[in-house]
Amino acid sequence: MHSISAPQRSSGSTAILGLFGLCLALIAAFGPAVQQPALYHAFADQRALLGIPHALDVLSNLPFLLLGLFGMSRLRHVADVRWKGLYLLLCLGLLLTFLGSSAYHLAPADAGLLYDRLGMLVLFAAILGLAAADRLGFSAARMTVLGVALGGSAALLAWRADDNLLPWIVLQAGGMLLLVMLACCRPRRDAHALRLGLCVAWYALAKLCELNDGDLFHLSGEWLSGHSIKHLLSGLAVLPLLLPLLTSRAAR
Image (cartoon, rainbow, N blue to C red; front, top):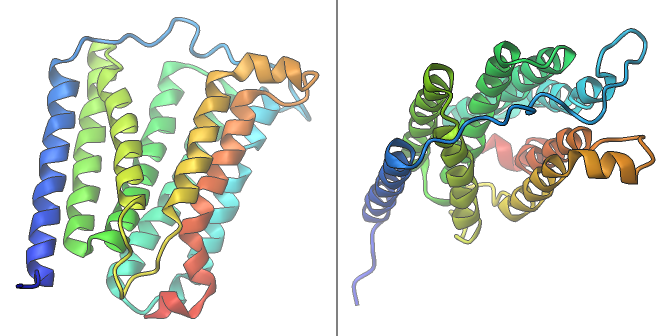
């Protein structure tokens, strides 16, 4: 019985990723257009605090800033330039998400939402790139980052030009599906064994809270809205990816 070499496995993984990305692109291009809801910007918590409009939706982005700064402070311990590049992208994504989301929630409107989604796009690319590197290798990681960057940019152009939100929805749903599939794969022996299942669980819970923004606001006695909780849980979803930076494993 012949064993499959690492280059063969890498080539197979890259081909499967390419086919997966092509399927998503076809759905985004030929699926029915989806318009952004008219009340998209009408978040449940409209309260100001210390002169900050929509204060808790703004301040709940602080975990992205703190995690991004923490990651930046640990990059010097990462010896492998390939891992360092992916972690740098993750930290930049966290910082850009903090800036974009905070600016958007100060005055929710489509113009600010573009910057919010651009920050999220960088963060998505980094998360999926790290997951692909951990499970499939760096060739797959490069393809994943490039595919998310190009696909996400096209999705944002479609939204701004034609008010078609379908490509952005496909990007998010496809990215979550890819993360689930990667979580089911064994880590490579020379990788970090990232806890991808935790990332999936926390992010799924965050999306559930986002979809129940007003209900959770009322259930909490108008203390905390579902959208604010979504920001906090999204930070927890990224935390398992940063944990290797606390250990010697990241220095390999």
